[in-house]
Image (cartoon, rainbow, N blue to C red; front, side, top):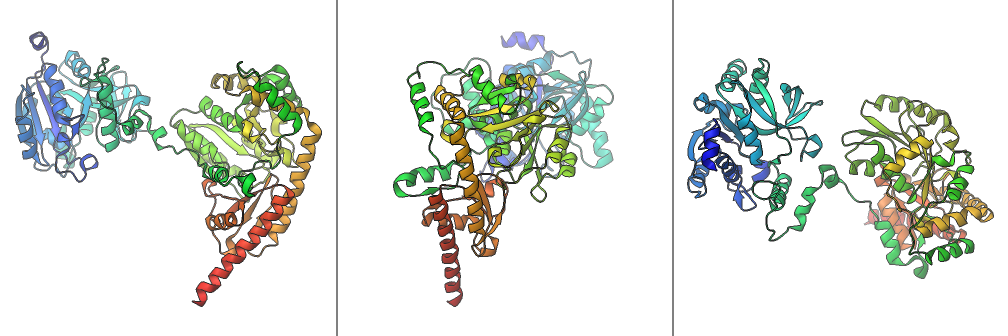
Length: 637
């Protein structure tokens, strides 16, 4: 097989640039980066084996950092049958990578495969370069699968006009492909680099490619589906080892026999944006469960839940539905009609999900691709930003102004990459209702706009669902978790134009809402008197809490229209985290708002029952008093 390859291909020589330190990958290790083992085999040995298998008989390795160590290791490697030659780059620690190739310029007298010493690639890439008809020119193997790039921020991007290179740099904002680090070159590239060096005193490979591309003598060869990776960081190293475990040494389609699997390495299969994401912090809910709110009297005033248990009608519906748990759930037309009738919208514009949070996620997955922007006015519900990051979206955070939308700032923040806007009214965690005129101005932008109205039943304002007829880009979210008291059922709904509802349904999982939750929703909607009474009680409790908490020295209340009260504790000298701990000592759980982009002076108190509200005020008064006493004692000492 090797004889056939050698007789049919003209390229026999490879030049490998291996002079750099590679500090990000081998920090603290006493080896040069090309000798870093990948799945038990040094990185450069893997590269040379790949080249050797594709008919390369002569390799020229440009060395620099720990060059002698690298030479000894390669010459002692029994699996390498090709002729090894070494060229030293005495200036390896200064100057760009094009200078290493200039050190080996004499070896460019014939066509060569040029490879970086830290790129692993399938033999198919070498094969495609060897077989390309270049008419004496040079070529770069590129990957057009941009979303599949492991580390797009560190990758060299390539702008193309057909197969001609019109731009190449890491900083390109608009590009068509990614540089794989594997080339087919000859003396033309050496000449171009020399001209650049004579002009600037330095030269990168990209400089040479740009110069030669301007003459039409440098083109691209498509790498197709061939696998490759730039092994430049510990994260990329872990991914490379995972690739070898799955695809074998040749990164082909036949996986090798698996011996052991490192659980931590599984993470490297995930896109960078998923690896960077953080799960929602449920510590406050876990703590409440551990404390056993009912048994030990801990008041759960930290999660904006309803303090009232489901009514007997709702419990009866839940039990009846549970007896049919063997059947798949169905969102019935009557349920959609009930929800639509409340706001006078088309039932075909109703989308039901597993809580408003799932609908947030559905909206983001429907409209936002990696690198596209989601505009969010902050402080607000942290889930908008968190879910945008999970899909690779870029949250653009625009601060509120005096509790309202800063419309001029929002308009300035909109770019051609903006795909989705999130508004929350009444806003969590401030409780403020956004002005109707400001919301309508944002809607006039015409882009998909989610208006989260989780707390609208507790406010004196009307829903923006009435604007859907005028603004089909409006997506109004509601939930059964707050005023309806069904947070544990995880059920919410979106009101929008039927065309948008159909689009959202494409991204929605079937059967995501269980039959028990659907039955609870039907029952609670029929329980209108109970609902009205509970809303009235929550409003009254909010007003009482605002008045009583504001009377505590050092506490400033930010008045709002939700089922919670926002408190500024700055004047008390107590940070939000410290106040949360002090309140917990008093048997009341409240929430710090750092995750919502608020200062460590704010806490949020959910409205509870009359008994819980009284306990909260007493605990807050005692907490501030204890803190002040401790400070006085410390000053005295």
